Amino acid sequence: MAKTILISGASGWVGRHVADCFLQQGWRVRGLSRQPARSKLNSKLDWYSWSNDADVLAAAMEHSDVVVNLVGEPISAGRLDEAHRRLVLQSRVESVQHLSSAFFRCASPPDCFFQISATGFYGDAGEAEVDERCGPGKGILSEVCLAWEGALSELRRSGLRVLVGRLGMALGKESEAWNQLLGPIRGGLGGRFASGKQWWSWIDVEDAARAMHFLIAQSDAHGVFNICSPEPVRQGDLVAAIAQRLHRPAFAQLPAFVLRALGGRVADELLLSSCRAVPRRLLELGFSFLAPQVELELERLLA
Figure 1 (cartoon, rainbow, N blue to C red):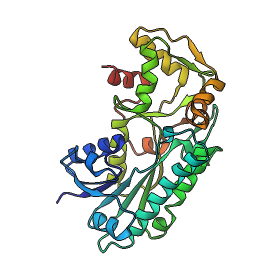
Figure 2 (tube, rainbow, N blue to C red; figure 1 turned 60 degrees about the vertical axis):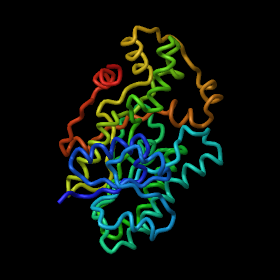
Figure 3 (spheres, rainbow, N blue to C red; figure 1 turned 90 degrees about the vertical axis):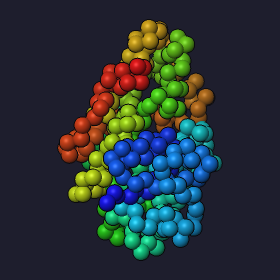
C-alpha cells in the first residue's frame, strides 16, 4: 500500500519539487496550502486549505505517514525591519505550533515530522567550515532558526521521529535567488558583492527534494541535517563562473553600503554573510548528489 505524505507549503516552488519527488516514488501526496486556487496547478495532489484550527489541520494530517513543513514568510520579501522580522519569525514558529497541536489531535498520527530550517542557523561564520555539530551563530536569521527549531520541542518529547533540514540557498531555473543573480550577469553588470569572498551554501532544488525523501526513507535517521552541496562556493567565484559560461564580463563591484541601502538587513543576512556549511551527516548516510559541484549545477541551470 502506498505511503502518504502531507506537505505544508506544497504550492511554493520548493514544495512543488518535493511533491513531484515523492509522487515519482509512488507516494500519495497531500498538499496543504494557504493559496488553494494556486495549488490546483498540480492535480495529482490531494489538496487541503491551511487553517489555524488544529482540528481542521488534524483532518488533513490523519492517516498520513509523514508530515513535511516548508511554511515560512520569504526573507527576501522585505528588508528585515522590525515588522518584517516579526512576520518572518511568527510565520515559522506558529506554523510548527499549529501542526504540532494537530498532531496531538490525530487518532492515527504520522510517525515522522520533517521540518525545514536554514543554514542561516550558523550566522556569519567567516572562513570556518560548519556542520551539524556546530552551534548557532549571531544575527537575525540565526535567532529565527533557533526559535523555529525550538518550536519542535513538544513533538520531540512525544517520541515522534523528528527531522530538521537546514537548507542552503536552493537553486533552480524558476528560483527567485537564481534569476536575481543571473539577470545582471546576462546584462554584463555582474560582479562581486563587497569583497566577493563570502561563502555561500547552496543546493540544486532537485537534490534538496531527493535529500528529504532519502532521510525520510531512513527509518533510523533523526535530528538535524544540513541540506546543501558538499562544496560551498565563494560569491565572487560563482558570479565569475556564470559569466564565463555566458561569455559576459563580471567586473562590477557592489559595495556593502550600496547593498544595505537597497536591501536593508537582508543584505547582511543573505548577501554579505559567509556560511561555509557542509552536509556531513547526509554524506555519512551515503546520499549521492546530482550536482555536488557548482560547475555541474551551472550545466543544469544554463543548459
